[in-house]
Image 1: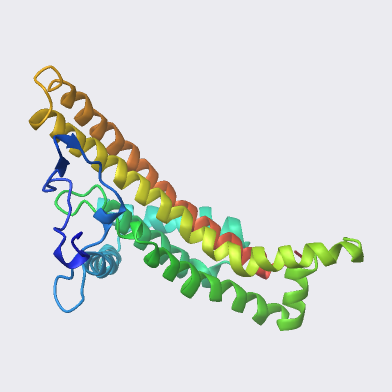
Image 2: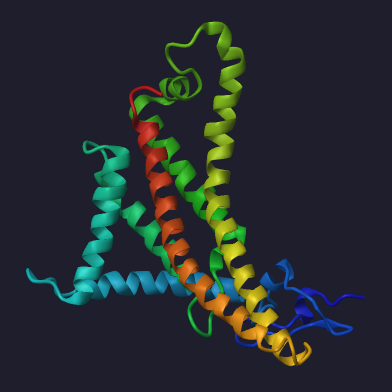
Length: 273
């Protein structure tokens, strides 16, 4: 009988025990992403999510505590992130007339996702929180989804908003029989799901790759024949390369999530579909 999640050791890139069957390498799978509770049902991903929130809040409070005309490096970093979220993402995607109320949301989403993704390559932690799809779904379905629909309904009214979303202008009426269900599925079902799946899939795949090459290198060094032991160096070299690639991907995924969130808000506020 296989051991349940409560009996499984917590995995990490630095302390995973390689499971072998008859001397053969057993690659890690999705079971490595399920953790036993630390205490009273609280798991490592929950702790990391709260830690990420505290890091984001502390970072911006400290960076804005003593603002100067000539910014310090800390203030410059915070201002650069704010400028990216305000001007490059929110204003460009939502429009210069209506973007300002949504800047805090875009900044919060980008910062929170970025910190949680960085945990995947951060020493000791080595786990991206968003490799659990529930966290990505919570931000997409419980935060972004209601924000852009409510924003659109407040501006246009419920009836006009639904008409803009489901009945694009300039289309023959007979086509609406096919087009309207597609628009409904896209705007009210697919958009929030795909928004969450993008970042979840990227973090899950990247972390699995790191596990495979790390444990593969350990196996080649400790279990393989003498002739194959030098190959472990190649495996660990891939770990280094993938870590740098993952560092790029985790920033891109935070940016993409923020951009798509802003684009959905912009589309909801637009006068026409």
